[in-house]
Image 1 (spheres, rainbow, N blue to C red):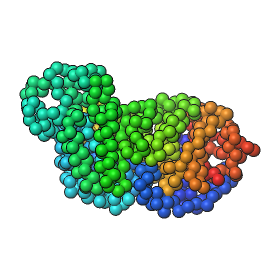
Image 2: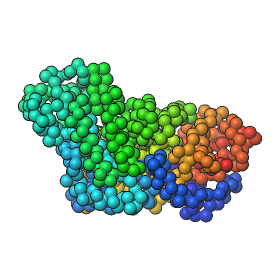
Image 3: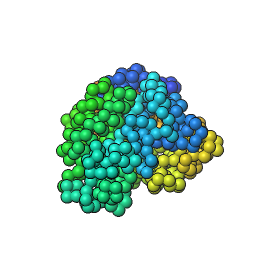
Image 4: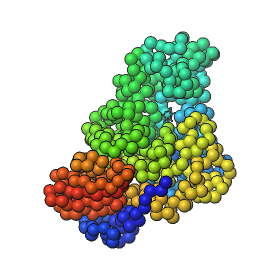
Length: 549
Ligand code: GLC
């Protein structure tokens, strides 16, 4: 189902982004205009500060599925490099590359066999350096995925560790004579994948602990050697000039008798990692959070742990949240996040390699995934767009590693037989509707998801209020109308959204005294002065973004 398209209103963002002249459209009441800053210069300024990650838009790439440069059906680093102009044009400021280190691929690269190298199917260290330097030249930063909780069972450390109780890596992993250990509390409540968290290594005649697949033995962070070796791995990539890390299941590093989630020794390790990053200018890191209610545990003082942590409370549960007609329910996680220390902010997603495509989560209702995306791009937090979500990429059906593969299908660049991804059959089959849901088609369709994303990214760019501005949510007299303000300095933006997908609503926003009518930048809602209140009218499942004085 395609969303209704109201071209004149959506185009207003292009006007005000300086691409067309900034005039109100003929089908609505005259809209005032306010003096505009030079948003390109503002973007350069904001992205040049240590707070850059709070203003940036990130883009998660599954390198295997993005672009294949050498015709083996597998995406690679040179492929990503060749698509930097696409990413730049879309308005992306930073990339998160899913694991690119050598791996037997039992968990799609989250089973690292060597921390200091590049998987040969993705290229070489020289290819990585070239990608990094081209990205930097285009103003795009690059985060790597750092998988520290476990390695692959093919890693040299494990290959050595499993041979005896006395080798140099003997205590690099969590070993036990039985399938359980009293000081590894989480070992008794089971692994994330499979039926037991303990697997026997016959050579050593002991069991090793693995929170994930058996091919992913957990490292033993009670060993100072493991702490030193993994920090050295982080330093290896810092020295190559990466801009930061996405830290995989970082809360799970250390196990105790009573818990395995963010125990004090894990916090201490994270502080060491942060201190390492702070030795380089303008680096940042984002945590994969294991807590869906709060990310408070990840930030420390705001400057000694993570810069960002994923808000999965909205991020993974938005399918249910967006079905609700209660604006207050939708706003709640974002309002709660305002208590975090200055400098720390949540990372906002509607998709990732671990969950279903937004199309599926939204139950195929386009207006639902678009409104969810709009929230991630306007609420406080750093948006992370999962590759292909800017197209509304449809899921695949082929499973190679596990069920999550349905959201890891190749990027679709055009309608040719291999969709501009490769010259041969891809490593995993393309998703559905590939002839119409692709970059080439959507670029030329003003009603497409691609154009929707591109316009929103242009609107956000260089407007400080959306990065570090304050958030004020005001309850409307109609509970299905979401109203919030983002403000910074002399600029205030208002976002309104209808949580009702069936009817048009008109509501009063009490006590919001607009100094004048609002200037609509995006969407088709109206926002007008109504004495000491404001009045909002929104079509079903629609929205508006306004500049107000
Ligand atoms: C994280 C990754 C996921 C992986 C798991 C184990 O949750 O996002 O893909 O399977 O860690 O590394």
